[in-house]
Image (tube, rainbow, N blue to C red):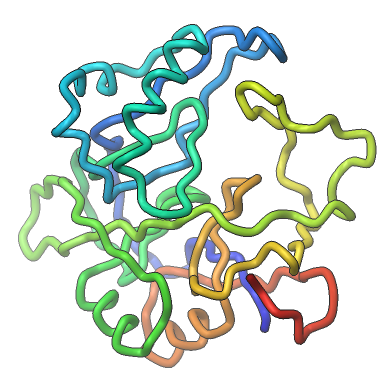
Length: 245
């Protein structure tokens, strides 16, 4: 099985632009007592999560940093609403993408290295191909133009990790309290074959904000003529006939 990084096709001429954020979020951490870091990262997004049943939902609206004890308390309130396999970290984004959009979008529309929008018709065609784990979540994007597309956000679960061979040998382990690892994406990314999923054809890595897809997903997009993205092969460790988990 081959794997690819999914990136925006900059030669496509699409002009689509989104100015928005997700409806809710976890706060960042204000000085972790273990690693002393002040940080948050909004690259973990779970657009299927609905926090309206939470009595204190207002605690998830304002971007801010909190003492780690408050962050951990809010994590426990969120956890029952997460999709299977979800991981939390400071700054995690939850709920639908809200904001304004304009311009011409491809059938697949990457916004950030970790976020992928898809037009409804394109998603339905991919699902009809039998691809695994494609979950499109409604957005709340406002268009001020005629013939605006219906954009859904693919929920990209964090699965798979970079192989140790592409990481600094002197790296420290992630913080045991807040989870911060303090690494930058390797220039020559190598995937750890033993961590790759068998139930998802598109996902993001656990340890880096990168969209990854299987060869099945890439070939289906190309066969269906879906535009907006390009696929760059990424090597994996171990034999080509590895058995993903």
